[in-house]
Image (tube, rainbow, N blue to C red; front, side, top):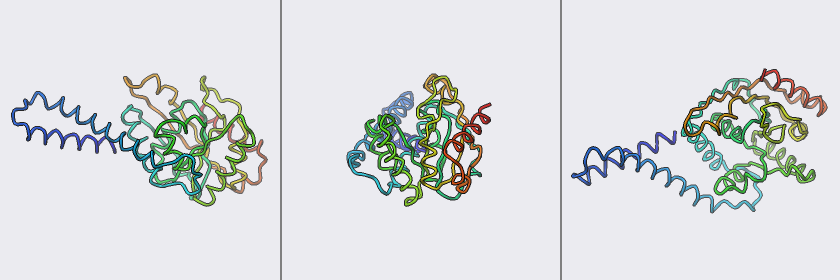
Length: 264
């Protein structure tokens, strides 16, 4: 959507310049259009930077800001189109009409970006590594959109993050995305599952949406010269009652089996 907006603005700016400068040769229209398009993008990034200055990361977020979530969604959609990442999402009809936990295999740093770009109509926040919150502009926006940093090396702090995520799901109706592997797999093989996602499911009394991700590992190799095909497939949902009746290890094993089957 943003690419079309940027292009329309660039065309209008080019037309204004052409009318204002009658001596401008037609051969200059394309360079002017490209320059205007790039200028609009730079201006958008500058606006995001200025807005981020008013979003303090020191303030605890109880109620995620819908505006920040919207800005993240449209920006991710823009980046996917800019990088020519073609995403095929299937299985959305399985999504429950209540806050849920979305789990998937983890192949790339682009994984949550692809989901945020295409999973529209739901309030989704991720539990993410602390380093992502230190990224300029990005860190401020994801913090106020309800994303939560987790310290994987500190069990007590990690549990506090999971508790906060459960409270946010119950009070704000937010879906939480979390990768059970805890980190991306460089070989694309499933790593050992950590318990956090399943502790959260039990604490939040929420259904678990199981998804598989394919193709994101190629994005960093292809950008900017080649397009990338990514497949996101929702395999199924483990409802609240089933989650409540299962032990964490049992729930973890079931989710892993579903993902392994979906990747086969």
